[in-house]
Image 1 (cartoon, helix red, strand yellow):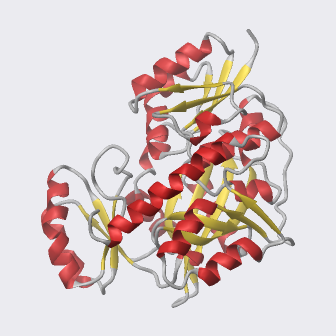
Image 2 (cartoon, one colour):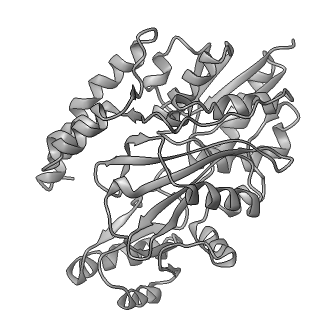
Image 3 (cartoon, one colour):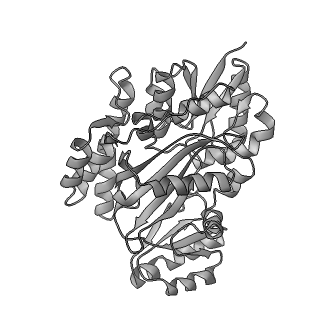
Length: 391
């Protein structure tokens, strides 16, 4: 037994993008671990898939099972729960698995509170923010100008009913949500409340780097979101390969100073009031729009694969002379049908680039695309119900 295997954790758009890049780079042994069937389980680019529970013990058990077939496993996480699970089982599987985490720092810096404390130390810009740990802390919100955004200090929406983010537009909003927030705090959930930096989803920029366990950044790229879904505080809808040098510099600083390993993405929002790029969050795994870097010349997933196996990694230079767009057609279509005045953004995202790549679509692997198309009607239905006040 001398085969190695790429193990992709999670099969949504980010998982499928990892599968696409690794397959294009010649990797044939790709196994997918998911919590339920999804678009990537339909792919002909994977050897097989397994459905596992969300807890770390289930992941550990499945990795031991795979080790009976493969000599070495290289893991590619796609959500925060994967990062936490890998840190928990690190010592139990690291002899036969490459886990792209620092088992102490990766857990520590899942918290936005810790991320912002480091920004303070490093004198990097971040939004005005307060920590809400007990119900009385909610009174501190009086010092903010509305609107504000409230988020759990770490992602909890995967395993609990708490929201991913909550926008408070004014005093009436605050009064309406006060009891709900106090209830979550009583459950032990902690929050950060931050000022909302002016500007829409096209003001979000990111640095993506792969930093190895020797502390070297082997490859990197930068880009920006062009739009988000379902609103300006949602997730990726379209993105491009364009970003200023400040994003590169601040991203490198955070990876090195926080001593983080693996594929890391600090995300910034441009504030035109003081012309600064302020840290929104640091993601310690691959995001939905990371194929933007691949399409503009940087193979960040393949970089991890080579480094994990001790092979030489070629430094790649991102193409900036050509405008590259990466578009998730499903989110764009729903935005067009549900957001007033969206046509101009929709047209720009699809037609303004020198090269446009569509998330999920692959003529040689069409089943994930067809499966994803079927979910558009459900997505539109959910948005309609929200507008009618039923969700």
